[in-house]
Image (cartoon, rainbow, N blue to C red; front, top):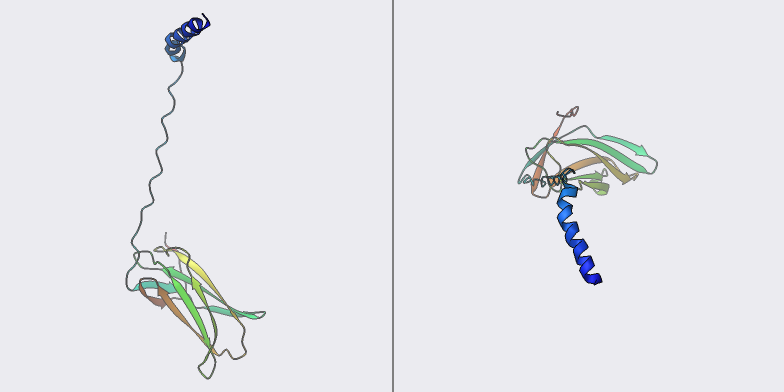
Length: 149
């Protein structure tokens, strides 16, 4: 008998449920999913960057060089790398450092590169080598880098 009573109560509840919920607002529509990230093809061949004059100072036991670099190419630069090499008066390598940008270097993006090299008494002059994963980099020295809007 209990089974029949439970079934009767369930049937009545099913009949009355639409009337009970008629006064309530419909549930909100689910939010639209975020747009997928668009992949942009990186520069192949020669990329173009602008850089400021390197600011080199001795800080304790290190020689610290700071350079601002801006991507002026029309596409991102994948695997952007900047190498600094120090040579002595005889022309032999006496130290250096490498910076590699951890993500694609986007068009118009400005980065500040800090290179740290242990100080060596033989250091006479330094040079810089710009490169990227898909080709060469054509650097252009500029007096000042202005962000584009």
